[in-house]
Image 1 (cartoon, rainbow, N blue to C red):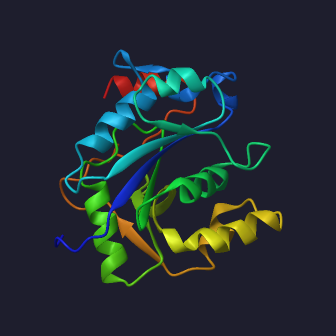
Image 2: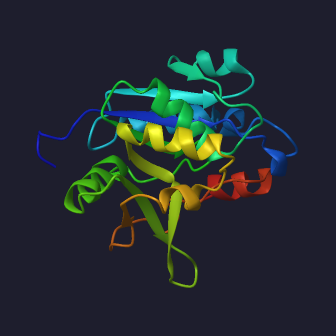
Length: 207
C-alpha cells in the first residue's frame, strides 16, 4: 500500500444477542484465556496496515467492554437490528474517511486484512470492500461483516435502515463493492471461522 491510504478506524461488532450461545455475551467469552473482544482488539492493533483508532459496538455489559480501553458505542437504532446497526453506529462515530468492521467472534482473521481490503477498495475504485473466504467445498463466499466502508456511505445507510431495511446484502448491493478473496497460498483456511456456540469456540481454540 502507498502512504496515500486515508485513515481507517476499526470497529469491533459485539452488539449481537448471542442467541446461539444461550444468550451469553459472545465478545466476553474467553478464547485462550482472554475475552474474544480483547483478542480481536489485539489482532486489529497488529495489522500490517495500521488503524488510526479502534471502537467497539456493544449493547450490554458496556463497563466490561470499556475496561478494554477503547470507546464503546451501543446501537444508535433500537432492537438489535443486526450487523447493519453496528455499521450505522460506526459510521456515525467514525472520524476517519474509512471504517473497517470485524465481528467479535472470529479471532483468527488475517493480519493483512486491513491492507488487502484497502488495496481492493483502491484498485476497484469501490465504495466498500468485503473479504471473501473459501468454504470446505472450495467455493469462495463473501464475509460481509469483514468490511471496509467509505464514510460517505452513512447517508445511504441511514435511508436504508429508516425505511426498514435490515439485510446486509440488500444494502451493499446498492453500491460498488469490491470482493477481496483470501484464498492465496499461505492464507489460513480457518482465518474467517467464527464461534456461534461454545463448542465451536473450543474447536477454534484447538486449532
